[in-house]
Length: 184
Image (cartoon, rainbow, N blue to C red; front, side, top):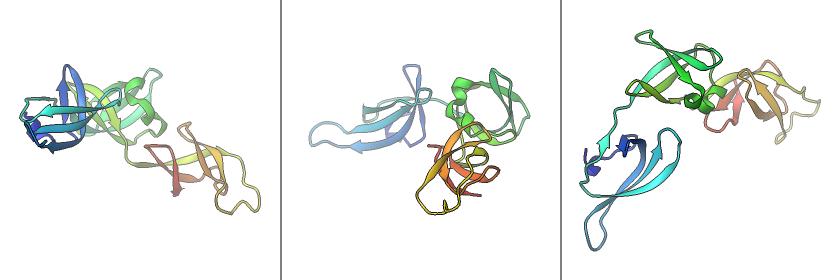
């Protein structure tokens, strides 16, 4: 593949490392050849780097297979997912699951990215609905805006919620930063 064919979301194999293109731009300086500026995100570490390629440079694209998989359970060492098409089960280590574990409920479907059969990362939906398992009771008069209190949701994650939220309510949580988005 040529650098002229870059697209956002394409995964490149550069020196044995996998990088996702998150931004690119063709640039023609006053003198010299056209170059392609890009921002690349390391698939495993999440590190973002700027990289400039000469126009028409050959780059190796990596095949990344994204599959919808259902989360079954955590066996103490790995998270067990099942392919919703083939019903094959796949054990995914905690390192790969990362922060997604704070939002995973049993039987929930998530997108698992695989390269040569090895799981790379898990794509969660932008938000999930979780039940509040514990929060301090609100006091009378706490209906006003602005105040928050800590609450623990069913996955064990602790988030900040408005004072009027009570134990047992379902709340919508942003999977990118863990922010409260609203009541369900």
